[in-house]
Image (cartoon, rainbow, N blue to C red; front, side, top):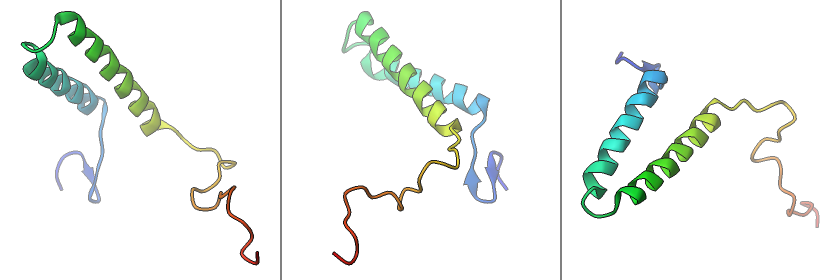
Length: 82
C-alpha cells in the first residue's frame, strides 16, 4: 500500500497541505511573474491562501446529528400524493 493511502482512499496530513501550498505558489510564480505586477501576485496569493484556509476548514468540519442528510431535506418538494 502506498504511503498516504488507507484502504484505497488518499489521506492528507499537515506536511501534504504545506507541500500543496508550496507547489501552488511555485505555479503562481511560474505562470504569472512576467505577466502581472508584484502587487497583483500578492493579491492572488492572499486570495488563494483564503481559499486553502476555507478548504481546510471544510475538510475538517464535523456535522452534528441535527444536520439533515443531503437527500432528505427538500423544502420545495410537495407531498408525493399531491
